[in-house]
Length: 371
Ligand code: G6P
Image (cartoon, rainbow, N blue to C red; front, side):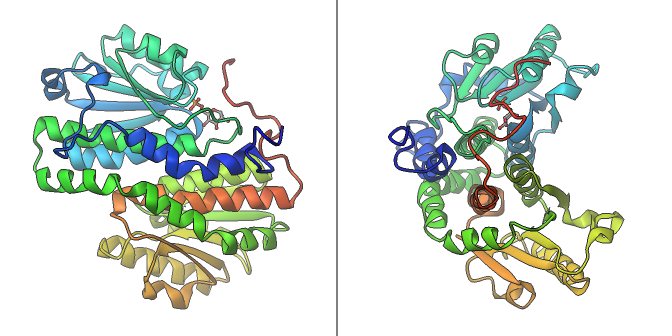
């Protein structure tokens, strides 16, 4: 009913709007007044955390994209090797796991069949298995050694939105917590990052307040056949997530690429007028930033219509952007929290313009519990 949707036409719109609150709720109670993280709820001792020598993340769909972003955060802050794999591949391989391997399953519902089977596969091999989950009392938290709940509240729209942002918060918390316990070389940075995480709800709110031009853009592109998404570093999984949302909701051909791979194939797809959405890393990451600016120039020279997501005040991209979408300035690793939001709004609006029900996309289910 309209009341359930809180006055919005679709649950998805309501859930996109709820993201600042969802992020805040997922942080709640986990940052102490001393600025240190408290994640005892994961039921893993400091000693066990010190013994870990490898992390493997398993997930499906949008949760897999949260896992890809987690890899960058875990390697950087926690200083541990990290592999990420879709659960449907992991469960049929012979992964090399030991007692010192930490497996993290990411699942909004806690019920995705492939992820659940991958959890069982990992536990049989004596790995310690944690899950990041949004649904209390679902199957995965019961079967794992520990759980970190996201507090997004119930998500009704089939395409994940607020649960994705809260999964990102959860993986940042875990990466920073491991760094805190293990005392990595990034001690000061870790402390500063925790403080910054606490400001993310306002940053996400700020993005939401500036989405009208994105909706306009989406409506203007409703007749396109294909949209490409490019990113580097954590902007790459953001590009994959942007493409997935467009496929799910608008039934449109969409692909995400690592911008560095352009020359190895995707650039052949560029033709006059093709919309390409590019996620630009913060200027502070000079090497990455400069590389992506030249990627934008390369595709534009070949006729692409460039839609650029960059941090506010980034003048360097202005000459090469047909459309510029500004997001608040945050450190590179946290940028997915702000850069994903315009992509959700974009797909939702474009799909609506095409007359699709964004809450119930054709052929898709909220959680895939069969094979
Ligand atoms: C389905 C949903 C996606 C979701 C994926 C994984 O495909 O449509 O939105 O990302 O399942 O679900 P999970 O509950 O395991 O996160």
